[in-house]
Image 1: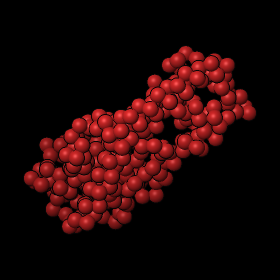
Image 2 (image 1 turned 135 degrees about the horizontal axis):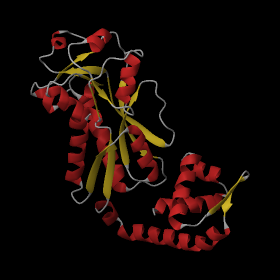
Image 3 (image 1 turned 90 degrees about the vertical axis):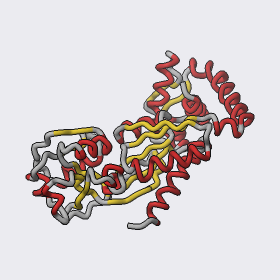
Image 4 (image 1 turned 120 degrees about the vertical axis):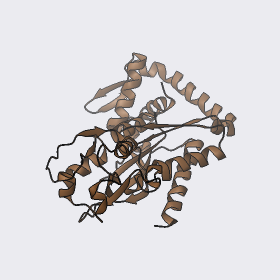
Length: 305
């Protein structure tokens, strides 16, 4: 059971409908409804009566409402009394698709930990849909996801673009393709080494399908995330399509274990976006880490290249 679930029930009761509560909470109505249903399943009680005309508190819900209000009042008193202790004792959970780990994620977490030594940071690798679900359900405080130019950003989240780059082919320095200034689609399809594909659910999987215009190379490998893809390239297993900000400056790239080439005649851009659930109140520690990510992205943008 989460405090926000109780806050959602209180909002539905106060406003008289799921729709109005979703608007006030800046959530989609399906997301709000699913969160309430999860609480009902946990309690074993139908808190709402759902009809075509809308939803209202059930008789059982009305009996439990005073207890819900008491819990929320107690939480408010606790937050007010804890003050700074609430900030330093909190764990911040970040979901990431493992893009820009070295230039952005690691420096941001290091800077945050230096300023907040008592606050734990948990970084979890996941696909974009998993990150979005965990953000809605309160499992993650922040999410780092990739988007292609032209993608619609989900309305349930506050989104901040951190980095913008171009897709590149990440390959081993000994590859014959490394002698070229840029690689073509035919080079990717018919190149001398297998292509290491991202699994379905990753933006770069969708980009590869778009780039190859429906043609199907004989992928020899598929993997989860950029970090494993780069390791496989360094071991000579093939080449993989990644955003340039996932390759440039990576330790493997700096020591010559991997390199990259741009895709000829392709103007696609990839954005790394920081997302969090829209909410009236944000834990201070999560807000501070959010701001550290934004500052670090600006430093990268002001840097050379």
